[in-house]
Image (cartoon, rainbow, N blue to C red):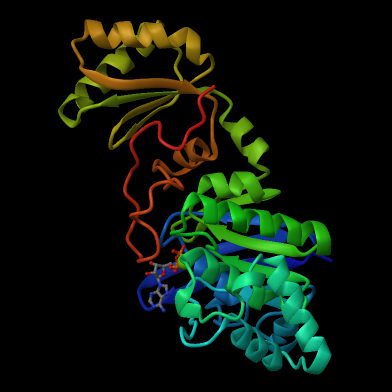
Length: 342
Ligand SMILES: Nc1ncnc2c1ncn2[C@@H]1O[C@H](COP(=O)(O)OP(=O)(O)O)[C@@H](O)[C@H]1O
Ligand SMILES: [Mg+2]
């Protein structure tokens, strides 16, 4: 039996088709990364699978229990840390966890023991008796995580657990998530806008865009699908047309292989079998055509390139946070960001 299963899920909000036919299957003990930009439909899927929202059509189940027909059973089996968690700033962390625990029917020494255990697990032992208003963003997210773990759920849903956090807080949460799986074998459904996060944590990734899964597989397999090396060329906006013409011509004459060429706002990304070999040809060609260009880089494909190849757009990277949280739509990223150079 799979831990999580969805078949042809659709959800409309009036005219908006937030989810347009999503099917997926997550095995027990797996960390499943649900990667997509803001507005892709991630939270809507999480809300359906956690029984908080009805699908317009399609079905979903958790550990074999239908999320629409058996919501009470499903809720007992899952832990959920939602993107917009409401925390009372005047409460202490411990008070919040105790209240949550009672909602799950825990009491007495079992409740106390569980509160201590999850507090340790998320690394908040020193701060747990302080008011939540004194917590940093990262500490609040770890408190959310603790609260989702109180009743020892077998399946955990984490909706963008690190969006808007600084790199250190993010790394702390990553460690906790890994530990959860190692110690308890929990199944984790994790949504993220950050390709690094999916790459770091997930056994398998689904890339979601405009309500549809556009790619699915292990990070390694997805990158291998792109296959080619990636050359990024940054050009100024008014040079974009000239750059495209020059590159297309080099491909037509056979000087550059016919790899896929994608325009992004900040330049061009070329997928070619042998990046280093073709770099000099590309630079000379652009130079000869009088195209002014900025940074040029060669690298192995990342999940960002998988996303680009699938959708034509770039993802946000973890160090660029302007576009977190507030529902702003993504903007194309400058070519070459968020990439590991080879
Ligand atoms: N309650 C709602 N009413 C109307 N539109 C909604 C509602 N919830 C989400 N949407 C829309 O559905 C789309 C997907 O949203 P969401 O699932 O929150 O995306 P994500 O979590 O990937 O950022 C967006 O266009 C969003 O504006
Ligand atoms: Mg969301």
